Every structure is written in C-alpha cells, then in structure tokens.
Length: 300
Image 1: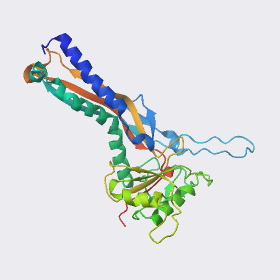
Image 2 (image 1 turned 30 degrees about the horizontal axis):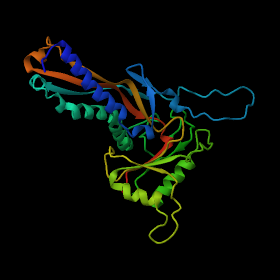
Image 3 (image 1 turned 120 degrees about the horizontal axis):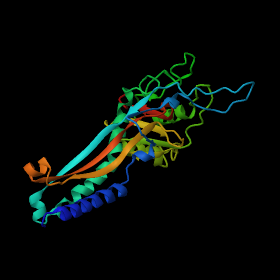
Image 4 (image 1 turned 60 degrees about the vertical axis):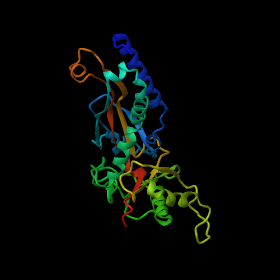
C-alpha cells in the first residue's frame, strides 16, 4: 500500500470498524449483576446510598428521608490499550494481519468492567463501602451517621454447600431496613462463583436430588453466573439483582473510544516508523447497597 493521507485515513476507518463491531458484539457479564451510572465529573458522590425509602403511615407532618447520610464516592480512572502497527507492514499490504488484534481490542474494552467488578467483589472483604465498614462484614449499620441505626451482617467464611447457600438465601430474604421493616428481597437472586465452584453451584441450583436421594429444595431458587474475574477459587457471592439499585455500580464517564496517532509529523511515527492505535475509556466501579449481597470467602 502506498502511504499517504488518504490511505492512512482509510486504514484508520477499517481498524475502527473492526474495533466497534467487536465492542458492540461482545457480551460482558457485569450488566447481569451491577447497575450502570453515568458520570460527568472526576468523581461522583452517592449520598443517597444511606437512605432506604419505605412507605409509612402519615401521622402529622411528613417525615423526610435523609438523603445526605452517605458521602461514598467513586473516582473515575483512565484506561487504555495501545497497539503499534509498523509502517513497513502497511507498505507490504499486511494490515490484514492485525484484524484479530483490533477485534480483540474491542472485546477487551467491552469486558473491562468485568475485570473491575471481579476485583471489587473479591476485595469486598477488605474494602469499605458507604457504611464505613468492609462491604462484606458483620455488625454493619444501615445509616452510619445514625447512632441508633439498625445493624446487619452479610459476611461468611463457609465453603459453598447446600447448607451454606441456604443460610445466605435466608439472610438476604430476612433483611430489614433501618426502620426495621422487611426489604422484601430474595425474589431475584444470582449466585456468582469462580470456575472452580461451577460444578458445586450447579448441583445446588439445578440437580433434582441430592446424592442421598432426597429432593433438592434449593433447585431453581437462584440463577447461576460463573465469573472468571473473581480472584480466588473459594469465594462465592449471592446477590439480589431484581431491585432498581444493586450491590455494585459500574460508573461510566467516557465510553470506549478509538483513536490514532498516524500523522507523519508525529515524533513517534518519524523515529519508530510505527503508527499507534488506541482504545480509551474513563470510569470505574464501586459499591452500591451491601444489603443486596451476601459474600463468603469460602475459607472455612
């Protein structure tokens, strides 16, 4: 290929098309378990996480829910992946060799929130949420600034089994809000496990009977999501995913975009004889409502 402004423009268009098609055709898993929010700032503060609204009898004046009980913020980060294409390869008409690279770049951009979410879930036993305690913890307050706030627990160390799963399900279903009223959870549950626990999870949720012949009463009580981005082989998470708010947040400031550095005036192009193509996005992931999640390290 003869290199000029027109051919470089067409090359960029072709690479971008590969990227966008792969990006749009990918099926990331995060949307099954996290809520998406749009950001317009360097960070977003989720003050409303401390308020758990519920209907109540009107006696006298209305009671306004406190929407400033939380100062939990998610800070946006920049993410990129840059590919270099040698000028010589273009002149030899070998640009087709890069097709899978740019397709893979699109898939990676689409699935990157999965990586963020996997780390967030795995580290939920040590990272804090809006309550000021670890996301998965005991003795947590619904309203951290209210000394009289009701408390709850959403943490275990039990290995995944029919018994421990049943305990997790019961914990979510009996969850009450700060006013000591049922949150009516457990109607749409998702069991999230690493690949190492897939068979165990399927036996719990899909088998007709246990090995001893007894009917499996847990069959169909939750959907199953095998999540390869979890960091350990023993952890497992049970999530309520049927609410408008979820336990995890994927915050998007800038959607994945595709850029090029292919100007002949570029120092890099001049010295390296290489054109650069980059996927770029800005956002992050963070914790939503811990009341909607139950996690176990599986270490016991």
